[in-house]
Image (cartoon, rainbow, N blue to C red; front, side, top):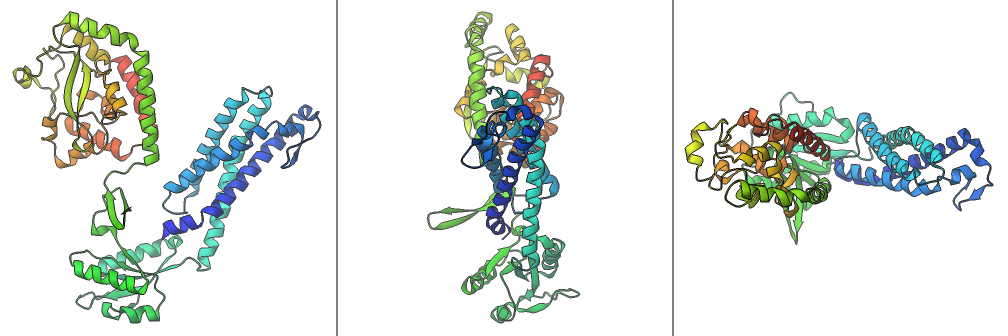
Length: 482
């Protein structure tokens, strides 16, 4: 219901945002003209939209940029919001980010102009003025919407049915948030139930077999089932009654689990599927992440061209065996793939593992030794400088891995995971992650797993950038690389 209201109010918010951007543009152009009067010496130029002084005409090239970039970013933020409501702090944060990004693009373009000083000053004015006016426009739009709510235009009347404690909690939740526009008309008991709804401020309107009479007497937009679905026949019966009478049917997320990150309906042909996502990341941001992976890994592969020639040659001279080490690893949701590395150990290192198993310095199912006797002379240097990881850039290009993500484990390690630890397989593995920049071998296995889950639950493009920057420092300082 809140999503429907959000979509209903899209045009109103878009109108106020467009007006705010237009006001910002003309305000910045006017102030720049006032502060640089010598630039108005040229005659007035007619731009067909509005007559501007010559100084103002210098900024006409910013018109499309000043509207297109902010509106696209605003529309993206609208899509992410669950309703039209947002706090002043949230709107201020969004507005400042949009104004800064648009201002940076304007500043870059200004260096291509012969009137760079005017464009740079216009940009300095644009950032604070547009941010303030966007916040003001959002506040006016919210004021208009709230007036419609207070008039009762968008009040959603809900009849609640279910166990008394759960139903009371749902009703109190709606009362705590009147801005949602959800009004509880009362409770409906089950004919076969024992719910009493004692000491409640909400009226008990009747039993479920009196549903038709209840909706004849009261305004009911939706029936909310606040109980569990142990009795599927009862659940389907209530939903069927609502369908016949054109009443919306709702149920609480407690029917499944509140631990799911996202829930939505998938429509395939003439069937609908209710999908619960345990890990949900924005598809648009995941696409940008993939573009970053391809661009950065391709750039690094080209930049490291000398290493592709000399490192394999030195490895072959240092010890017998292939220069490239291939090993099966486990990726997203158990997908198997071959991970590449420059060989840093003797060629039969995996066969020698039982001989050094007792020297393991890590707890849990992983195996790590500070001075592994299987390392070759060159291998220690490759591992310390992380050059041995370089071939994994090809895994990134193939899509088996990402630049940032939990490290891909061995299948034998996955078999020994606790159930909660398997959640780290819910995303594409990476070359580096929080564990890589948080002490690496020096932390416990459970702490390592918690860091991976922290990354998954709080993922963002900005977090990936931070981890990449910290990884560069960790590689240069050779911190924890063992």
